[in-house]
Image (tube, rainbow, N blue to C red; front, side, top):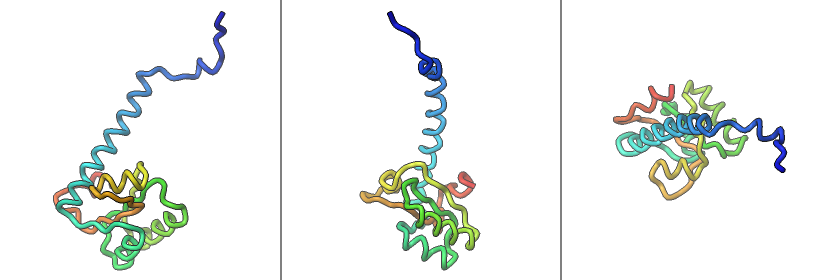
Length: 126
């Protein structure tokens, strides 16, 4: 005989789990689409050192940081962005996903948007 355990009573129904994941996936896809448009029509600096350079110059409009960026780098970028009064967006994917969404074949832990081009990425994220 099967005895119902208390662990099974805490499992959420499938319909609510799908709704939550679908909403998050839609927002990630829209950010990816806008990021691809920025890569085609705007100006982007990729990489940790390049991001710091654009922040020091004051050219950055938006900073995107991957979720697996090391904590010390993330806090340093956030500190520079706070001084430059620049928006920081924490990208929900890893550095591999961020590089891939930019259309590159390499990893990218941070990127700086200096010119958005035809995309509305700045108004979407802010």
